[in-house]
Image (cartoon, rainbow, N blue to C red; front, side, top):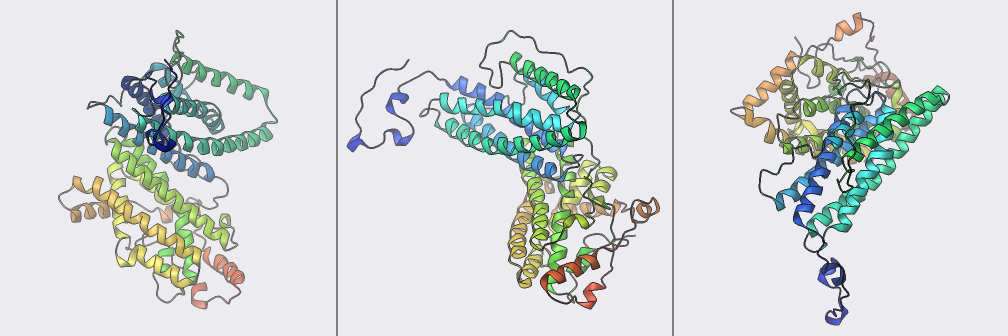
Length: 483
């Protein structure tokens, strides 16, 4: 109950370290149990959001959505981490964070995640679910006691602030998808009616749960699963949109060019931009690890691996930006995806993790990321130097993540490295069979790219660089020969 408080501070300085007014501080309508209960529900919601977007990355063909899901999935993971930390400060284990708070919440997120159409999933998330999640965090921020529960208030404040940007971006994406769908279907009213009914079903499930934070009393029953829906199943086969021409093409080995001392640093930046944008296949593979190890590994593993997945998506976008800066249309270059395709289809989850670890560790010597940065610096391209500097820093972090979570399964670092190498050696490149099946001719796209870049630079192509024609037929990305 509120009361009038007259309380002068010394020289009228802000009271209570600026946390709140004395008028607000004397109000006692809050409890630790209420704080914990709301945080646990929000923890469940944020983790479901994180897991759902991560699981969609691999089979989502649209490049901008792959990277958007990687980004927002990572941010949701950070929100999960912050929430777990705060709950752990108020309760001793077991914290009960793995329990489903209410069957209505579970129904809403199960049926949302199972949306067969990406446009429906995106529209429901950013126009309907996330605004309600945002409101729940705002209410927690405003209603928690600002002095006694200051850490919760700060957590809620930061998450609510970040969700505003997430929602703005996501709603723009949803509207763009709907505009495209509307143009294709000429505004089919049946599709609109079907979506409206499905959205109402999701809202009914939330209503049965008392909404996101459980604060609204409800005697509404939890609805049955949406008619005809199937439980969501992760699809490990990478998909790309129509801009990714000739994705099976392994007709150019950029590492062979990059590590050849006979070629100029500026010419090598093109191969580094290509290697960066090609890293889109790393999130496609890493998503499979996070999905398949959902129950096998603790949350801390998922948090760190989600950060690495997002970093790899950022690296791909660095390559995109690099080509744009050079006036080059990257969609005219075959961006190969067979690394993620082959690993996801040929190896089990621990073997995939082994390959990832082996590659990350291999980037640490002087001939790895340091070398790429030095080449970029020597090239005179400031953007290449900037990107490679941060790419190097990211990969150092990723190598540390691997040492924390992968190496302990082995007797030594050397044994872990050997296992990763052996796993990679098991992967069949299918270089010849992809060509025999008519999936690609392994066309050498390098001369056309290099010629265009030289024209943009106003310089003559180097004859030896122009003639470069090494492929992946008999070697992998670390230049090890294939059997």
